[in-house]
Image (cartoon, rainbow, N blue to C red; front, side):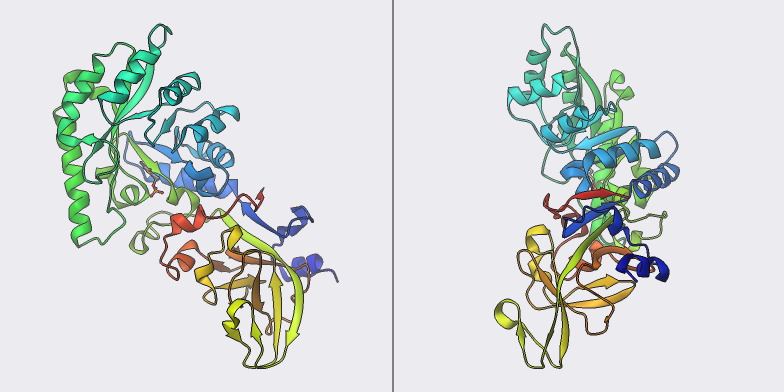
Length: 394
Ligand SMILES: *Cc1c(COP(=O)(O)O)cnc(C)c1O
């Protein structure tokens, strides 16, 4: 029986039939999972609050256009990206929803491009506001922009105390259309009872203070503060919109926020076994011989490595799944390949595909499983998968 029909007979879904047989590793993305997560998030939101799907960094590695379409289908009404090029990519794919650039643009050329592509820049002060005012002059159009306030992150945004004055000043610029004011939480995924919760409360208080002191005409602005963690924490952080990345992709930003709403992981990383070999006891494998077999061992060489996004510092700390069975990864992860101990999986064959991250039947390996073992975070793991891995929609 072939590998595929055996897999089908076993009841494990094996999508490798849909995959280019010339690929040795790939990322499977489920638009349905993204859509379901967006819908679950929308149901969870406070009344009158809406969902911005954050699709920066190529949709956290899932493919920005795929994610944007699925999230809009699930109820998101706005998209967030980090860079100008990420915004243009969405427009080139004929996506028409409002797009906010979360990063700061510095060059007049970048801002002009924003205006041309109907992308909303974030302003942190009068410098960018005046640039935008000049750029829109004579175009007959008003430039939609949003103002960012720093309430306790010390990254982008103006000092929160200056918020009311700046809102007023920007509103005086006739070529600008101020659509929103927002801020960003620094510690929302931290401890519920410690300092982190106090910092989140302080940021929320500062944001609230600014909103209370807005000039009367400023009260119709779209106000937003929460990321995934803030969104899952509670309604008092939702305001008019929430900006959700990680949860949209199916992952809770902290252990204590798991299960607040049902989330489905949308990404699976798979790779093919390119060679099976048997080694005797006492044989060193891969660079530095960090693994030495204790017994005769059946090794599977898999065509994926750190140049694909399987972090080298995870060497010897992870496993791969094959039909629900966990196969330990052994030895140093190399640039393009890694080794599995397949002694307990005699059915694993050359050309078989294994799951490095994501679901396989009832078993699952989460980005959190990886990040906790290599001093990272799930966000970094997800956006670490390189372009060398083709994205396949399932
Ligand atoms: C990336 C980003 C988000 C999304 O954060 P998650 O924790 O992934 O939900 C929200 N707001 C801003 C400003 C961001 O840069």
